[in-house]
Image (cartoon, rainbow, N blue to C red; front, top):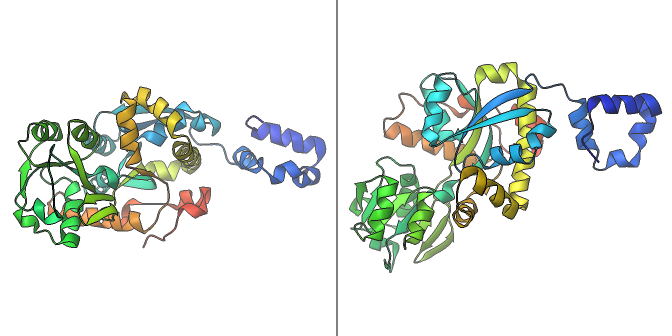
Length: 354
């Protein structure tokens, strides 16, 4: 059955009577979600621009919701504008050009601490699995402590350092004995392929490119291949998010509800239809399919607000303060509002933000 409009439903009720309609068996099945949409208030905006990034971690659901018509099914026209780099989103939010954007909690924490009222309305994925360390070709470790004395390329202050610190703490590695070399990710890939460094510490797409250049995956925020510690780990939590300005949130609650419904559908599609998702995203993001599959498999696509989101955000805030990238420490309640997400689907909000 096609999408049921508000006008069609009201005409149906007028013709057969409300009592009859509400007693029909088909309404107790799959039609109720369409009625919810049909009877909901109209969105304040029928058209809007959503900023995002050419990145499978950040904008997968954003692109899928557009390409599969999930935004349109909510009565919305969303124009996606994707930039090359996630850090480019922050200045757009601060300058007022991006009242609706897809990025990460790091960006929102930074702009909020700078006095810009950006509000996360849902997480979209835990991408800590993309924050990883890749060893050079032929690197052999007998234990994690073999990392001591090795040269690891990493951008100074990169978030992957959180995972490295937690790995070191759990496995008894003296992190002060690791020689970190400040190096851009693209240079790290070249350096491990030539044996100029022992390992690289970066994020996607550079992790997959490093492995493709002959490197060996060692560990990430969520998975370890280290001797003595193989399998899932919890060394980092890092989330991509949908955020809006506080003014946009106040003026357009129904618009946001409809975006959240569309993104919930898109998240389910990404998880249940990975092959088709990769076909769509490979073209939209211009990422080769084999690389894209590896990148996406490192992510957990979910809109659930749970302790991993809370603890991950608080850890990142402390990390940014330590690096003096923040002048003050914003509280989680200052830059999140999950009330609309809870209205769309109460099961998605597992914790109360204090």
